[in-house]
Image (cartoon, rainbow, N blue to C red; front, side, top):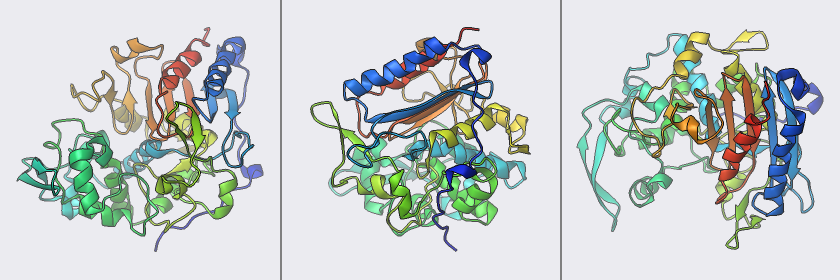
Length: 419
């Protein structure tokens, strides 16, 4: 049975956020206003369409604001409860789902994926690629892809857009979607096709960002015996009261679904008119609604995602329920990739989350051990266990050249800590 698009819950059914004054948790109200100044500067320069921000410390929300336009109508202002396509911010949620099954004894991290998805048994490594017809040569992989490899993006599976000339052509020829799609297909169908395509490198011997978490999402389906949306709703989203977080929505959600914007040639923001990026713009409310992308498919609100982050910060506990053991959270937040390099930087990766190192934390005010990730449509979050701080910033623009706003935002949050 396929999953269904569930209705949005009425606002009066939501649990209220734990709001407090900044001073009660060692932050400055005056200094936090610099966040708003930063956002307004980017709005005035026409570099972002709008944004929603949540900042919390010690479990208390001290700043929750909406800025700019959401594009839903020509004049509509961004609302705090607007819905955003969170793209790769789906990945930490799916990683938690997998680790819940790990705690149930469903698998071991270093078991081969092929034990549960047989199509991965005979993995191959890409050798020569012919751009004329997208043909390629390959050699058999010497190692098996493990579940740990999926959680850490070290399997050799990539994204088409990360290597468009080779991987993009190979995936495109096979019909593998990079992101969420409106097509009438399922994650199981696409993962089985993906399993037969070449890897960029031997499993475990490099860090290649890719469709690993989509495979992980299908693994959750296989191990739980439930469709991914159903498992998430029963095990994570429902118990955390993330009542607006879904893969798909009914049409009435369009009044809260932020419209996709882009950076025009003159460097300013505009909203897609005829939605040439139809799949990424319309998939939550249109199309077949059958493809539950574990790597990029969820939509959410800043408030909902804060609830997920707070559960991680509280060592796997929320609303009187233990989602994960503190020991599992500890494992997920350790460097799992050794000395492998992520995108040329010095940060590291755990099981589904990036981790700030002493070297990477020198670049801005964040602490060593800060956790986080972001989404392609320019949503981001981070969790600082040392300072007990959570920050969520959601915009909806793709592409953009002004990603520095996220580092500036991080600095604005940290400079407001006064004790």
